[in-house]
Image 1 (cartoon, rainbow, N blue to C red):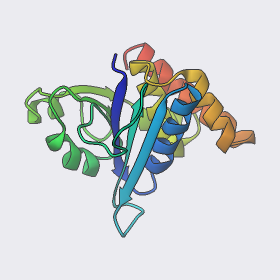
Image 2 (cartoon, rainbow, N blue to C red):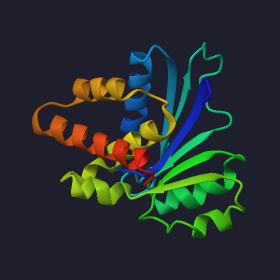
Image 3 (tube, one colour):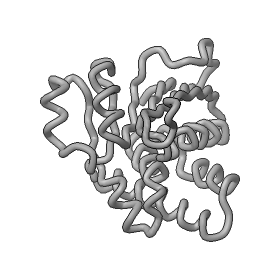
Length: 184
């Protein structure tokens, strides 16, 4: 697809977006790529707007910040409403279908973005890990884009989790990956 990805992950505090950005960055490095990650969140943290930005490149990253995203992963309506209007034309937007019905947001954005809705939070719940919506989203994004290899993400998950937490995270990742492979 592209050799440089500028990714914004948006949601609310408590959804693990900063961790998801770090996880994607680590997995990119395992894939032999370069990565740079930044984050921001409101003073209220849990429940307030939160985002993580990530640049992943096959080559050298000259500027570590994101200038024009070509991928957005959005897990909350607040983040969707804040980020979608500012995204550049053609940006791929992976979002949780629970926050906004598929079809409605495409019209609001004038069809200038490439929207992909997945039942991310529902899939996390069905995996028995409702707190792992962020991991399901990473799986769906990896399956859809090939941005990061499944093996590298699983390796990064093993660096952060063990026992039941690892098993739940791997299950959530694989469920998200499968969602993308079958088209949602």
